[in-house]
Length: 60
Image 1: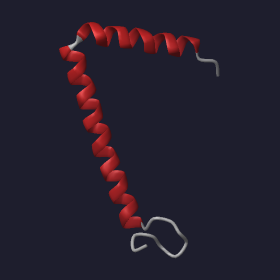
Image 2: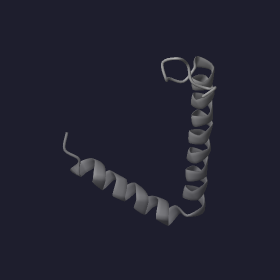
Image 3: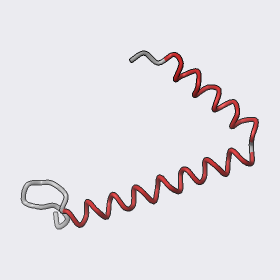
């Protein structure tokens, strides 16, 4: 494949490109979550409560 080096790994340029695309995706995902939380505050509050319960019951 053209985008892989001799060792089967991604080249540095494509790896940086992949990290940049991932960072953009995560920013968009966070922005969408914030928008949804603003538009549906009751659902957001319930989701926060569920997440808090998950964190309280998680065993290290």
